[in-house]
Image (cartoon, rainbow, N blue to C red; front, side, top):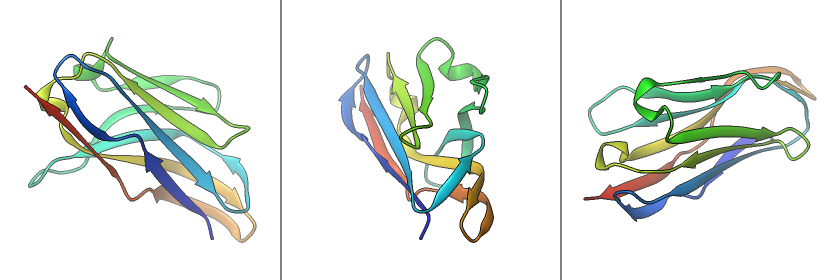
Length: 121
């Protein structure tokens, strides 16, 4: 069974840092663009940052200069280093992979279960 599992969330004071991790497990041969999204109650899930196979990254303007996404393909992992956190960053953070090559065929738009990040003022 292929799945994505996030970790690293928690409670932190404004100005602090957290590092989120997401690992893809199962019989996976290839991994496409990996990314992080976040969602607060009553709002749609929103894009935070993505990283392509070639390392090209895209990010949402509000996290520019504060968040950094990286990936380790050998470990099938993606990370989100979050610095200078603000209360507005409070959300459930989700890992997403747009396409994975697996034993049973291509798997599109896979999501993790989410990890809560809470930033206190």
